[in-house]
Image 1 (cartoon, rainbow, N blue to C red):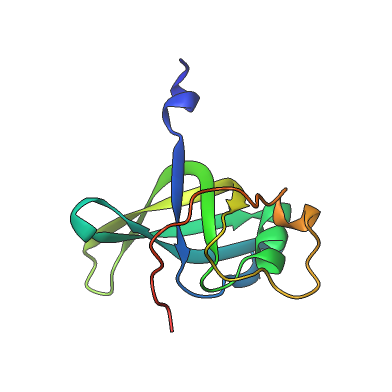
Image 2: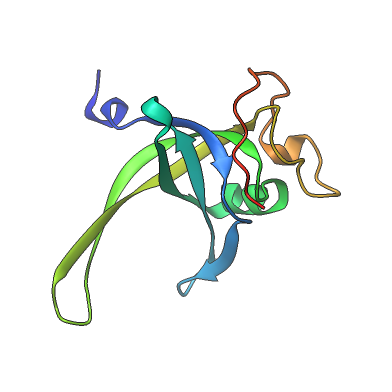
Length: 133
């Protein structure tokens, strides 16, 4: 196993809010970010920030919406910065490389083709729904 293979994440959960889509930097690279709620053991829910770049960001923005039940594929990345008091801060985000839809969540946005949904899956187990209303 290579070092690159060791940083691999697969999460299944519900999208908390519609993705935030913007273009960043001089090259105006597309960026889509959103949070996924993942229910773990003992009814504890964890929230993960997901980021997609480039063409995948466009696909995510066109396909995913609040309440979608998704499987997210990607890798972990640590982001570091200094806060207003010059304290070192950091967080872990998931940089996505793919996604699938699962039954039990919100439908994708109107006018989105199946291929734009990254070969969206209609399979999967029914899960316990989290109310995002």
